[in-house]
View 1 (tube, one colour):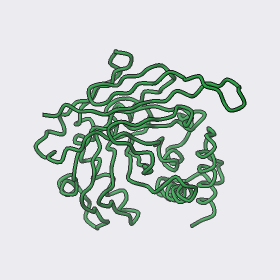
View 2 (cartoon, rainbow, N blue to C red; view 1 turned 120 degrees about the vertical axis):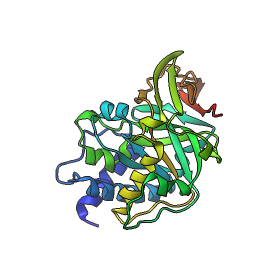
View 3 (cartoon, rainbow, N blue to C red; view 1 turned 30 degrees about the horizontal axis):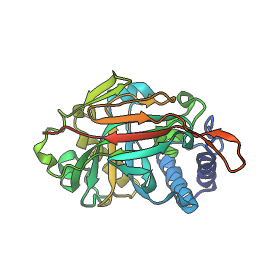
Length: 286
């Protein structure tokens, strides 16, 4: 492992742990391309796991839909890791001040029941589908850890898990093969007003095309996908940043913020707790 890669991973890990927003990586350690970016990402995962963040439980894929490609001005998918302690099922509670600039996205996720190992022949969605054990509605929690993400190069964004910060998974649907995944719709509403909507077909034409992309991307680096891992396939709506007001994504996912709670510390000084976000996924599949 080159010293450049380890230095970049050290900077990103330190910023993540200290909730410090970065302008980017210094030129001397900035990943030159996407393969190097994923090498930095793996080194970052090792460092975070060593500090007690837990193991990587799966993967998130960003920029798989036109709305997100336009939002981030990036024309191709990008992947990041998802740490096990950041994954909730059904409902999750998230402390607002544990993030730099937190947002939510309405997603489709899958859980794998079989490995997708590296192989010479590329995967397509037909080859990847047998490995899918269940399909789920999901909310991805994202964190903008940059002073200005639009000024940060794509390899650096990838190196830092491409905004990934956790997720809430809905009820697993094991008999998903009866569903038309391209026709599944998602709607996100904020304070009672629709903030975005999309369909499964927005994800590279079919949600499982994103899974195939990830399997091929990892195979190119000698990596596979493992049974039991989860994969967030991409957001159906543009990211919605949370500033502290109540937020209620509906239809496929809901979220709301509890108001700050006043309390007193042992010294008697008044303090105000950070808002706690409760995110709940649900679906209305036939």
